[in-house]
Figure 1 (cartoon, rainbow, N blue to C red):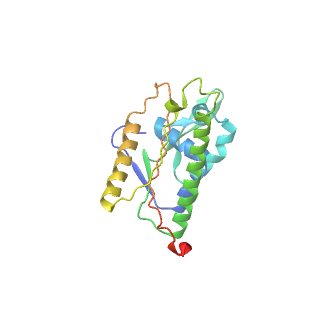
Figure 2: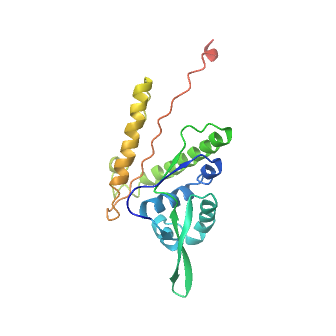
Figure 3: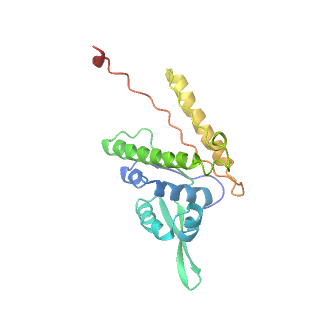
Amino acid sequence: MSVGKKRTLVVRDPRKVRALRTPARQEILETLVRLGACSVKELAGQTGRAPASLYYHIHELTGAGLIREAERRRSGRRLESVYEPVADRIVLDRKERSRAFVSALADLHRSTLRKTERELVRALDPKRSREAPPGESVSLLRLTARLRPRAATKARRMLRELVEFIGDNDDPSAPDTYALTAALVRLAPPDTRALT
C-alpha cells in the first residue's frame, strides 16, 4: 500500500457486502487493512486460523474486488501470493437502499454480531480471567434514549471519531488487541395495536 493519502472504497454493490458475511472474511480484510500486504501464511499467523481454511475466503474476497493479489514472491522453493486490500478504508454507501443491498447488509450485521458474541464469550472465559479480570478485558454497555435528529447525527459523528482514534492508535508492538463493535440503531416505534 502506498503511504500518503488514504484511499476509500465506497461499497454500493450487494455482492461486495455479501462477500463480508462471514467472520473469517471480515477478519482477513481487517488484518490486511491494518497490516498491509500479507501472504496466506502471514494471515494465518495473525488470525490464528489454519492456512488451508483461508484460501476459499481469500478467493471470495478477491472475486468481490475487496482484496487483490499485490505480488507473487518466492517462499522456499515455491511462489506464494501476497494480498492487499483495494483501499485503506472500505465503507458502505449510507444512501443505498435497494432491496438486495439492504438484505446483504442485514446478513453482514448478523455475521458481525456472531463474531462479537464469540469474542465476548472468549474474553469472559474463566480460564482467561486469571490473565485479566472481566472488567479489564470487556467493556459492554447498552442503553436506549430518545434523540432528536441533530443529537443522533452528533452521536454518529462521535462513533466515527472513536473508530478513527482507535485506528490511528493501532500499535503492532502493543501487547493486547481490542475489538470495538458499536451499533447506533433507530428503533421502530412500538406497535400500539398490540396493546388494544
